[in-house]
Length: 95
Image (cartoon, rainbow, N blue to C red; front, side, top):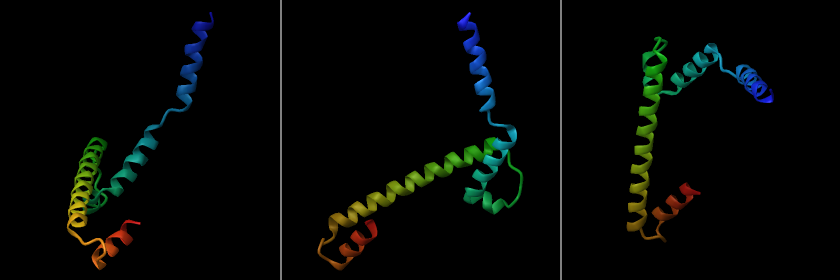
């Protein structure tokens, strides 16, 4: 009998912590506001699936940009005289 009651109590708990459609809509709207492409569109209504796709694309592009900048920085540090003014500037920016 205890086993039958456990799933019911779990379903009540999960039901109370569910995110509503309104909350999801609000979160997607906030996410859309963070995307550069979305800012260009203004207040146009876009499906949530498209916002999520654009978010994934944007995150991937940010990862590529970080990787590129890291590689460029590594190359710059490898070719710089570490006692030069340029190296001092780079160190100050990294700290």
